[in-house]
Image (tube, rainbow, N blue to C red; front, side, top):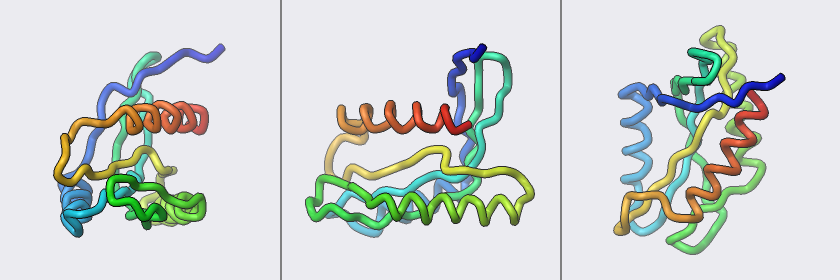
Length: 128
């Protein structure tokens, strides 16, 4: 029997946060996107914590400045990077989240972002 668990907290190192900020500041005209590398730790029967240890910059495939889409090959590269990091740190790391920018508009997630996150998180939960 599977118990539904909730992602309760995200632990993000200063180095990863700085990397995400630096990536976002590479352009003020186009949205950027990257994925977060880490692990989900089960802290109770109903709660998980995401421990993010690295990030991976995704290359844009969409030409519209207010959209950021990536090719499936980019996710494969990110997964391979997570596997390499796993070997380096001796723990099983995976792509555990994503980030992207909203230059010159609200920082709050759009309805598209929320829908993407819901789909992405359901896939992540199945994989973990």
